[in-house]
Amino acid sequence: MKSVLKGLVVLIAALVAFSAGATGAWVYAGTSGRMGVESGPGAWRTSKGTGDASAGLVQRATVARQGLWALPQSEVIYFRAITDDEGVALSNRCTYEIARQEDPPTRWWSVTLYRNLFWVDNDLDRYSWTSTNLIREDDGGYRIILSKDSQPGNWLPMGEEDGGFSLIFRNYQPDPSIALDPKSAPLPAIRRVSCD
Image 1 (spheres, helix red, strand yellow):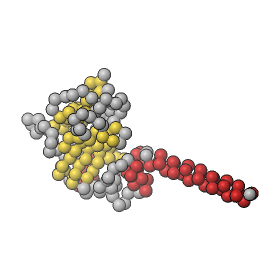
Image 2 (cartoon, one colour):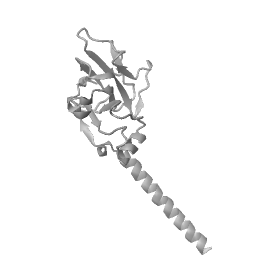
Image 3 (spheres, helix red, strand yellow):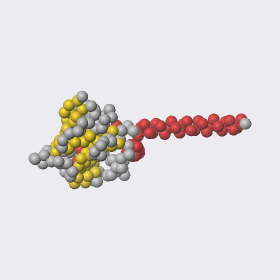
Image 4 (cartoon, one colour):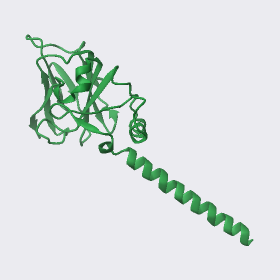
């Protein structure tokens, strides 16, 4: 009886230790600040090595946890924004304009809105705009409006749920200059237009 009790205590201790370690790894992997995040232009940030075989274990775990099917930088470079260009956290209480005069040097690009790592549910089933489906300005530039209220033109709905969100700007088959100097990538400005 004494050996059974001792075995049970060892088993419980092992389970507690495993659970604590797994929880710590899960939290650690969810901290994007440990991924070598680099500045991009304005509010946009990127991480070298995302999707690359040379990425470290923490970076791979973070990518896996966030559900991102990451490709190497020769195929796509991901930029993420969680603030506007003034450094204020993105919130669905505000309306934003994402605008740029020219496209980045890339074969194709998209900008997608996420809340808690998922698309934001909306009646239009619109989750992103791309270099090929948005309405261009007369000068060739583009302007995308993010708002919970319907807007004319390139409207990206933010949904009714309160809280913050993030934007991902994907550059597919980018010019190598974007990877070499992410700060110089010609990405759109994120300007807060108004807030409730």
